[in-house]
Image (cartoon, helix red, strand yellow):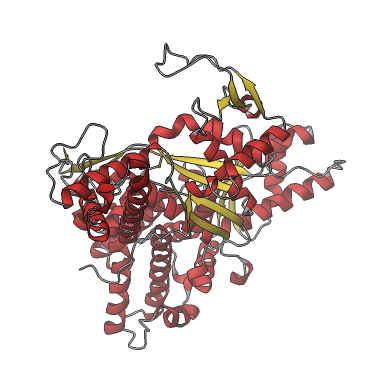
Length: 595
């Protein structure tokens, strides 16, 4: 088998071989219609002892071929046996086809990885995607719960970019509504305090944290006592704008500490100014017959204090998959939050986005159906909305809950966590669990230098690889380049056919799975899969290094065998390249040395 015949995506190569075998069988069998191959997959078997790959081809095609799955599997397997990629084929159970590939396939896959370099696993032409994440109310500093959504959204954006999408990172600024008026009144108290007044205890319902003291001091510097002479309706917008501006500056600084930067900060108030996009959105829904005057039934689960039985303007959400219809106008004539949210997503659609992703907190799960219904209605089904819920973070230190921050008043701030353990630990560990599962984040555990600390273990794998390069340069290859690109060229003629040990082939299999893993993670919008994969890859790599201490023939550097050493250095380069790529997508550094 020629090495150049393989692409960097071995699973895609094998899938093409399977599709060709299925199509050839259909032609020879005289089937009138070509087989529908859309559900035929090639994937790793659940039990590695069954082989390298398995396909469901016979199971999904048997009915259309009018034969038993087992019989069809035997016929497809016969054709696959001629492939240069396949060493052994087994038909299992009712018709699964298990494939064991030749060692040359994995060696060639490593060669393809080295040729691709930093582009290994990269996709192309994925279309435009809008990802809205964080979107914390500008009423205070970001807390550790916001941190998880921020890291998840940013890593998902990077993953989709790597997969070939044109990604816009967006933050929705909730700068309209009652909560920002409460912010303004809370800031006005701090303004009076900055002027020397004893304001006493912060009233119930106001924001109590010390973080508003700088806002009050800024207002005092800029306005002196002038605001005290104004009526509430006069000073409120002045204080509100200043407070929102300073809070958003702080939020941007907090996000920057995590190396998170948005492309767009979209103002909720902008929807209602000028042409009033909310009114235009409701008008569009009305024209399509999705708005009507009606009455809502009382909420399930008993009496609700603020519910009133009245006729009101409703969105026909049930016509688009929701459980009940939804109100658009409040009793006082103002828009509901839902009406503003529909207008906001219509704005995204009008900006050209057809793939929308929203990252929300754990308390918004009940809002998903109505928002999907709204996007379906306002875009006439032309846009899709995927909502990713990010569950709570339980912050611990050596197993004990962490006390709340004095500065914030009632929570631990994002900046406090980043300052204590560092950006890399925060980013990796926030992704080392699926987004919709609660996360225990132990500040002491993420500083341990052990296998039990995933971020250390993965970064140490990258650093260990570079240590091997430095040692090989000192002990055997004085011309071994330490520069990444030059080293790739230097390794291009390595005799990869010398990599035959079972542990080496297992590592090559893991490396070859990287493009498939990325493809699946991007399709499912699940960046945590990268973190899991990197830990497994690092574990395989560290495992070979450990074996080499007891079994000298497995060591990466064999002084008396330059050819084998160069082949193993190529394997190490594959590990280093993939670890750096995956960590880069997650926004985590790949250090050459651990300090």
